[in-house]
Length: 184
Image: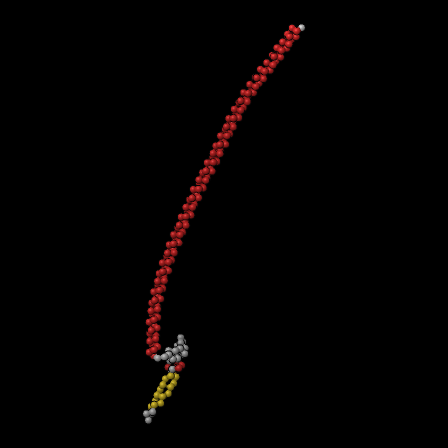
């Protein structure tokens, strides 16, 4: 009986071993197939990821380059604008200085001309004042026309001289620019 049980166990063991080996072979085949599929899928995914990563890096590089170029252009434009502003200010200041110098020259010329005219006028006034003072003192004190008197004298047979004073207003002609009270 032991022999039979042993043979039955051996047969059962052989059968179970064959089933396990068949399952093992099938599992290995399935794993091998799945491994190949997964390797291909992962390789495709890695290639796709690498392509996408390269595209993203290129895009980032383009953006970085564009930003760098924009900053450089901004700096160039800012410098050009500053230089243009300074040139305009220099030109404006030069023009203002030129105009101010011309104005100063014209003022100096006008002041010189006015000083010359004032000196000439002062000299003429001094000469006229001298002449007027000379005439005033030569003719005596000034008298109003209404106060002027003429004296007419007559001599009688006895040699007596009689003088009468009369107003001299009638002997002066009337001028609309002067009235009768204007002293002469």
